[in-house]
Image (cartoon, rainbow, N blue to C red; front, side, top):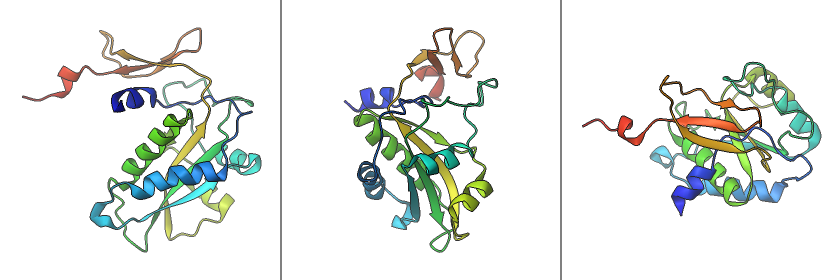
Length: 189
């Protein structure tokens, strides 16, 4: 059921680094993005794929890992992603990538989840550093980085507490808690 897939599709930040994701598997995810809707059917998104340890380490160094966990600098060795997808917008096609990147990222992560993988979308990226590492031409705007792997953490959805905080947090067992607003709070009538 789609709702179950959406519930399982959390932002995972810790992975089993011994389990690899290869190029062919990444291409299957990009194919899901390719088949997804695109504003005016312009299809301006392009992708840089990373599945080697050296390239993964370069990308890892450009990411800010968890805003609400200020004392955590990201996963330790052995728990880092085994693949990344750098999502790019081709400015020769359009300067406005609108909703395309979000739709494609969700399609990719749902496909990853269906395969037993997890992922996280990063918007907080040292983009100039990333561009220089991979010689990404300026015609491509760096939109997001998707980190992928086999998750080793439990992520639990819960209702927002009486304090109203939407900040995710980890308990003493390293369970990652994600508060969500009530459905009734989202509907304006």
